Length: 178
Ligand SMILES: [Zn+2]
Image 1 (cartoon, rainbow, N blue to C red):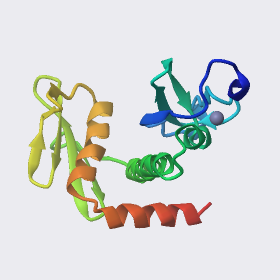
Image 2 (cartoon, protein in one colour):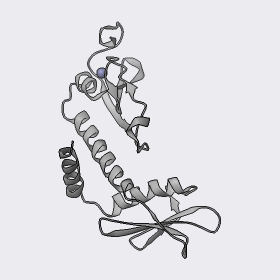
Image 3 (cartoon, rainbow, N blue to C red):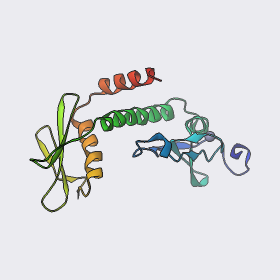
Image 4 (cartoon, rainbow, N blue to C red):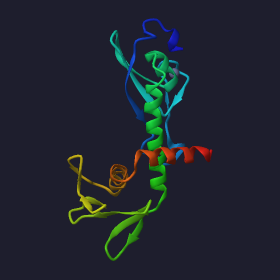
């Protein structure tokens, strides 16, 4: 166990980021979980990235170790919860299938009362249409595939539609099913 290994400080770490390594996996069986680099035991999907002023490398650890290493029992958990809620929203969004309209060559879905459409443009790139906006560029680059358009559709939906309350409610409803 790394917690006993010499040379790795136990305290004084700060959590600089949290990643959901399965963000783009819809099928839970495909997820390759990481092992916590501090304890070697936790099987982690939400990776807390830790830095220490006296240690050269970042460590990728689970929430329990992140809490101990930073002596912060609020923020690592909160950051992980935020990502978990987002993962649930993404799953629900993706569960609703796109329906193809051959006349217009578009794929649409109605989600939470809103229509979202994706389509391929004349030059092979993709666009996302939502709430009166036609998005052909996202984060400064063209949308190159249908998969990318689907991912961006979710991002756009997140930005323009859901409120914080809805997101939290959605999360708790989902939790009760398990
Ligand atoms: Zn650990």
